[in-house]
Image (cartoon, rainbow, N blue to C red; front, side):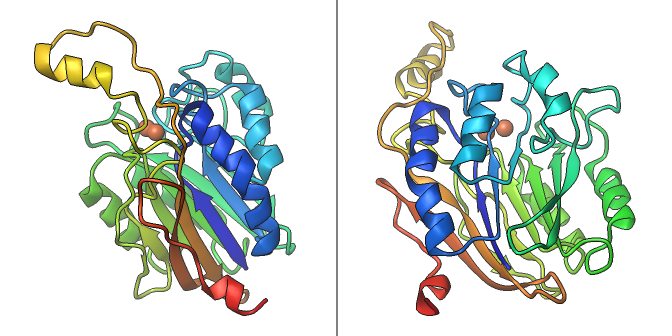
Length: 276
Ligand SMILES: [Fe+2]
Ligand SMILES: [Fe+2]
């Protein structure tokens, strides 16, 4: 089974690169399932229902989110009815939307996607470990589902590595999102779970984490907010992780970073082109 996870889509340029490149990648690599974090897709802050649909139409099977999930207030409404859109699971139970759902991939596999948020340097939510334990005990890998993808939206690499180690052997893929900067530690852990501390963003890297540089620089020099932060509008880079899973165990057999676009060194999963 072939999985692709793309990091936080930032603004119009991020949406453009997803729409421009993802459909071709889905067919070229015969991808079975695609997850995209869309928390910054609407002008850098949150996501609207039409934008969520754009990402689904481009090839996403599930759109995850994070701390910016409700920046656009309409997300409070559509999060409840759009079954392919997730907000972090460890929000209070009264929060609209869902934090996990099960989907059927293009190869017929049952895929559980869980969206979690960290506790270090983030808004205070419930314990993400307790939340994910409840999900995977109800839907164990290899029994109730064929693949488990966990998007752990968190700031600290230490907290992300703890989640990766905790879920090793219990999930197919654990990725970090939120920092908008890809790490170089994509790998398969000893128990067979693919892991990457942060998959980066789909956005313009000639920026401050996807935002135009002027205002953050001004704030750094003066300690005064003089304007709004706006997404950088230059050409975006598609950034994420590609994973091949064993169809019987649901564990990872191959992993590669994906970086396509200007500013960052290109990375593509060569293992899917070789067997065409
Ligand atoms: Fe983000
Ligand atoms: Fe975030």
